[in-house]
Length: 454
Image (tube, rainbow, N blue to C red; front, side, top):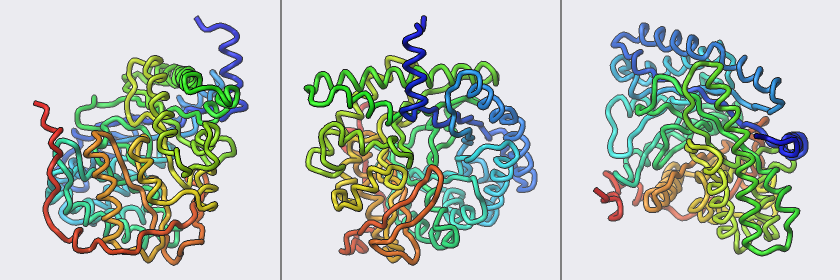
């Protein structure tokens, strides 16, 4: 039973501490839409998405009003389109037409993003995979709500360096193709190692082939709640600190569990997983960096930052798994630069560099996220950054990702504005030394020795 104290406590978290359900994401399998005719394929995709998601946004609003819990986004993820479109798509242009269909369906049902314009190429690329990847710049330029992801590595298979090289070029091309939108296409494009099948967060969400025909996944977030709780134990020892984070994560996760179960019941779609990530926003007081400062750092990036983030990530997971039987997705702490005012402040103060962020990704939920770099950065340097991050994920058996924005026409010291949840990002310097000869090698980096567990 929930007592009145817990009700009041939850209300305070929502009203004063930025607690929200970041997203309800409806995963939809498009495997039964596969067709050798492009027109029929697009029609089947549109019809299935609009039928399956017709009540998603309305149901989310009803739950918001009934329970008083903010549900910021309602989203859709679909089967990786490289798999769905392979039979019909013969050119990048064909795949781009599927992206436009996804965008039209997203507009029709009213969701803010649809993910799954994706390819899974950790060991090699099929012709369809490569065509989809090469279509990403035009797909991102022509659509508003479509998000794209490419998984180029895993602990079991190693890193596909041909795909890494190609993705460096694609990121640059996507920035150029959307330069009149402040390079927004790159904010909707993420490169993964060990991508999970059930992630509800964009831009990396897709509906894995092991999933049911349709599933409800929920992402909940509350950096402000954690920071407020830690303010009450300032100066206490690590045991008290850890217990406070765990208890707070438990409470936050219970809110998401309630919303997920209720959405599942009303829509008649099975509940999949709850992602209990601390996902910041540009709002004041909703920052992971500020949690790290509350733990005892002068600024994110100071000595001790990686240890503090490791502690935070671990305790969030330990508290969250006790509150839901189906924790999944990414789950932990996100460190996107543009979406976290504390991170932006740390970059501007000179406390946080790209190299320190890379070290932090060893212990956070995802990786190098929403980082703006000079538009003049070479594609090989972008590929090198991707390769470094994929190696961290591969060796540490964790999900890592890269979402870089080469800001066309901007250099270090400038700022790029995205607005909304995507925020604004200072342009960060990139190491000026070349990795061209390394990236130009073909083939793949083998899986690490500890991947052999059969």
